[in-house]
Length: 400
Image (tube, rainbow, N blue to C red; front, side):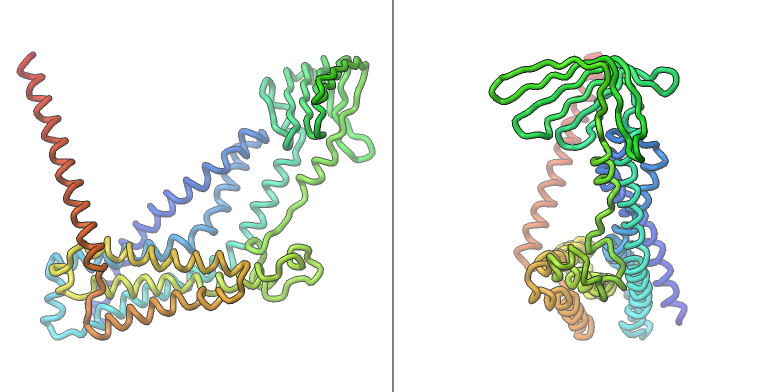
């Protein structure tokens, strides 16, 4: 590899790592916030929450890597062009492949990394994640020992513990049960405890009352000395781990169990998941080619109506949206599987044609003019706002 090629690869790799870290952090944070109820609703420790949060990371890496790469390539080439480095490379007699070769080597490495994560690490992380979530929801003891707060056990069933007493006893037990249609049950007991009968968890309540109200308004009150509230059915259902096609390993998807109920209901979902995993890794190379077609020419930046970084990202977003659309439809319509593979292949062919023919890939003129006008209006508005605030600050100093 030539010195210039190593220089281009090193610069693009540094920007790629920076873009990848920041993009992963943003996307990962949005996904983690959706799991915060694991701690608030089930009373799990923060360690369990962070473990679940870490297991989410492999699922977003294959999606984020191509976008980090297109940002890195477009930004690197744009800066090199602004500094006239691309012009110097061309003037020295180097071909355009001097720029293309290191970028594509980086893209191939990113594609291999995405393929390994998508087909190797992610399925096992998803399975572990589902097991942790099921275990936390089935952990009745950790659920009820939280004092003074309502806990949702399942739809229509809520529980509150007033206080914890010595000898693992509970005080001020309140249970609201509306799971049976047309009947609302409210249990209140002064004391109670969680006991095990025949290998099943039972909430034993002592010295309390049961309020039973129907939709017709009939109300009955039953006082009891002791009452056993069975929650084993809920715990068994919560602890059961159901694996969807996206949670299965690639080996299993290629040869699923014929007795799998989900596979029997919709075998097309398994085939669609395989197609998505075998096509998703291509987008790193596709986006690298798009960035090269947009920003790989030394003349393109000065003639372009829109910044090449914006152009590359916009085109990449459109291509990726087509891929997501095809993958979502392939679950139900097998013919969309051709589109799942066709989108990255066609996009690559188009980008290669621009590169080989020494053309510059740009947005349509109407889109470019609209984005330019929008950016101009935003800039004018921002400048007017700064001028207005500066005048207010000057006026305030004069009055003082």
